[in-house]
Structures are given as C-alpha cells and as structure tokens.
Image (cartoon, rainbow, N blue to C red):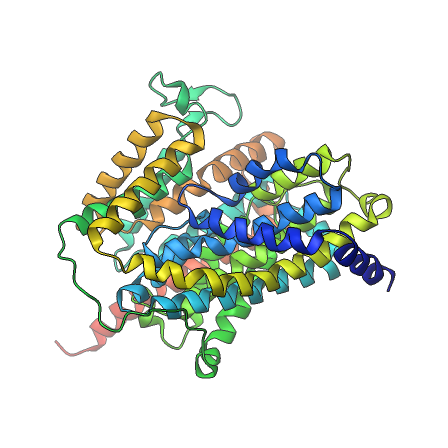
Length: 497
C-alpha cells in the first residue's frame, strides 16, 4: 500500500506525467527515424536530464525507451525499413500487408499488441523483480552461448523454402560479425587498416542496407501503381481479429519476459523467436511472409514487453539487459543512485515513481500512437519519386548521424547493392541480419566458457541452463526443417510411381 501511495504522490506531485508523455512522443519519433535506435534516442537526452529531479529524469528516459520500441514498427510497416533492431521481424508481414493496401490495419495491430506487451512488462517488473533477476544471475558464459545458438536456430524457419540458402546467409552474417577487435585478446581482424572498423560493422548499417537501400534500388525500376483501397487512417483490430491475435500476443509477451530478464537477449531476439513460434503454432502458417496479422502481433508484443522486463536486472543488480537499459543505468549513476538491492530502500520515490511512470507511458503510447500514425500513412501515399527521395535522404542522414563517418555511408550503400542482388537470387536477408546481430554474443561467450573450463567442451552440456537451451535449439531445428523434409520424403516414397 505504501508503494502505491509513493507512486501516486510522485505522479501527481511532480512533472512525472508530463515527462512520460513527452518521453513517449520523442521516443516514437526517434524509433521511427531510420538509424536512431532507442539507446541513441535516450543517449541524446541524457545531458538534458542533469539538472532535472532524478525521478523525473529516470521516468523521461524510460518513457523514451517505451516509445522508441513501438516507433520502430512504423517505418518497418510503411517503408520496409525497421526503425529499431527489434522491429526487423515486423517488416516480414507488416510491409506485405501495407503493399496489399492494409497498412492502417497493420499499424493498428502493432499499436495494440505493443501496448498490451508493454503493460505486461510493467506488471512483471513490479511483481517479480527479485525472483526473475535471480534467473539472470544464473546465466554463465556457456548459457549465453547456448542462448545465441537458440536464437540462430530461428534461421531454420526463415529460409523461405531453401535451408541451404538460409544457412549460407546466416554464416555470412557470422563472418561479418568477426570484423573488428577480437572480444578476448583485442587483436584487430579484417579491418584492412580502417580505424572505423575497429569496433566492427554496426548491425544498423547492414540492416538499413539490405532492407531500406535494397528496397529503394528495387522500387526505382518499378512503375508507381496506385494501390486501390489503401488505408487513409489507422484501423484498430476488431473483435474477430482478436480471436486470432490473443495467442500470438500472449506468446510474444511470454517470450519477451524471458528475453528481457536475460542480459544480452534483448528485443530483437525476442521478436524473431516470437515470430517463429507464432508461425509454428498458427492455424494459418501459410499466411506468414505474405501478410499475416499474427506475424505482426507476436514480435511487437515481444519487443514492447522487453522494454519493461529488461529493467529488472538493471534495477536489482546493475546488470543492463539491453543497450537502452545500459544508458538508463548510466543515468542512475549520474544522479547518484547505485543500482542494487539497496536502491529500493534508499530511493523508493524514484523506483515506485518509475513504475507509475511506465504505466502512464504505455497508456500514453496508445493515445499518441493514434494521433501520429494517420499523418504517417498519408505521407507514404505521396508520389513515389518524392517518397523515395525523402527515404533516401533519411537513411543516409540517419546513418551519418551515428558516428559522423563517411565509411558508414559506403558500407550501407554496398550492403544495399549486395542485398538487391541477393534478393533477386532469392536469398533470404533475415538470416544474414540475425547472424551479424548474434555473432559477437556467440563467439565471445563460447571462448569465455572454454577459458573458464580449461578448454573442456563438456561445459556446455554440464551447465543445466546451457543444456536445456541446446536441447530446445535442436527441437526447433528438427521441427522447422528436418521433420518437414522427412515428411516430404516419406510422402514421396509412399505415393505410387
């Protein structure tokens, strides 16, 4: 009861509510801008919070995280360019629906699934912080490696009909992830003398190249055809739609909870896993990749749930669950607060105020999302030559703003050209992106686990969490790739020749 009184006092006795609304609005705009991730949007605001009240500052930054995770789905659906890493899975069916003239419907599903997932994340954050944080502490390097393998096993179901092509692209992504400094020794690899590559190739650069720039190259040669019946305003899902959406939204929220409390997992991993599992359990798996409403609901619920649950290890133990929570952790330290068990005892007004602020932020996301998306849909219905020029300018300016590096522009354009060619050859792009995104996590924890165990590979099987994740990976690969192939083989043998 005391916690509710403190939260109520913070919300109505400080500018907390205003900070929550402002943070969500800024976060949605930041997430919708290609190249501006949630962590970047938050980092840009940190200097402005130095003179703020600590409670208001933390609520503002956390609300930016909430808004940005949802905002990334807007360009993912409208222009096939995920505004954030976590929105990459949304492009698969979101953009397909938009091409069918159902962009408003896709945005409405994204909004409602995101709000539901965000509220679930806040509830889990409030009710289960300490018990769930203990699970995150139990993860060893071997378990982190197996978590990466589990995430990579999603490639088996993202191959668009060709497992070999999917594996080729996944391995290519892992190879690109080795560029830069060695995670253990610090020796530079494959940098070719460019100091800009010492930190590796940023995931955002390749993502924007193979999704946005490749799509621009593809659209240039196409006639600007008017899509009949294209939405002029957002359309929230109807009751009949919720009969199909409740399960993928619940599934995405559950997986988002698990990934959020696991440092290194994050919204991107949760989104891809949720998309894969939603397709596996769907009654209409043939719609996935062609415009499935379930394929939007599951990843959006997952990444918005992560925005809440990723704060659990950050607040309780000082272990950031994502890049964005690392920024929030830095803000806590700047304001003189040390994350850990004593944080709740020494600064209860900040913590309980944060809980209330996050609840307000998710409600604000619904209101602001309804206001901001109708203009977004109108903008993408302008003549194609103007749309492409604006998107191209946004992509390049967003890329350059990351590190002010001309080399980044070259990488994006090269990735776009390669993506365009590979798409024409029917190679899937998602395994490439997933491999690059998870490469560092897999390699670094694999080597750390071997160092701790004196090069004993059995450490991956002796660790119970690691063993469970590896078995789950094997089951996922078997169910997605091996079993369907065996069924086709047996069906072919049983049919008369």
